[in-house]
Amino acid sequence: MIKDYLNEKTIQLKQKANNCEEAIRKAAIPLIKEGKILEGYVEQMLSALKELGPYMVILPGIALAHARPSDNVKEDCMSMMTLVEPVMFGHWKNDPVHTIFVLASPNSNQHLEVLKSISQLLSKEEFIDELNRCYELEDITKYFN
Image 1 (cartoon, rainbow, N blue to C red):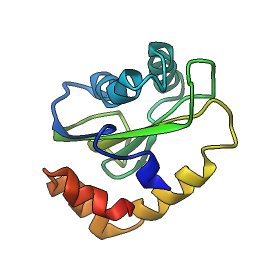
Image 2 (image 1 turned 90 degrees about the horizontal axis):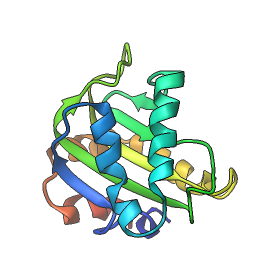
Image 3 (image 1 turned 90 degrees about the vertical axis):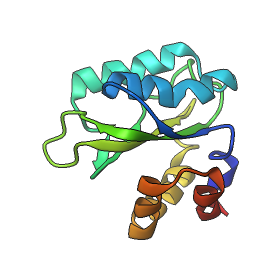
Image 4 (image 1 turned 180 degrees about the vertical axis):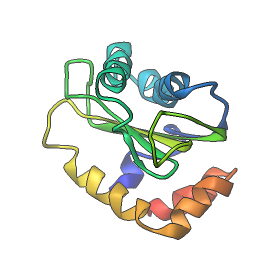
């Protein structure tokens, strides 16, 4: 299931970002390029971060950027980006963030299976370790098959 969402078009490894806002914007670029989300969804994610705080930092070093379903999302989708240098999101326990997932859905039901699958992967310490050291797409996509 995850391999339908995370692939060579939607994964970016070892990118640079100066702050959490830039990291979210860059992590969403593949989804914009593929026509799966509009720029308005990125603004929604950033607004949610400003309003609600760093709730999207779900584990040490891992952020799951998302916003409410909207017309700015054309289809269920996900992207992933790892950073060369982690950035601060303002989470008291889970900062700094080295990996950002962007999850988008046009409605609130369809993305639950993908969320469940990614949660299972994120519970594996070996996967988290691989995220930190991975420079090649093949090294990370093996976990999605």
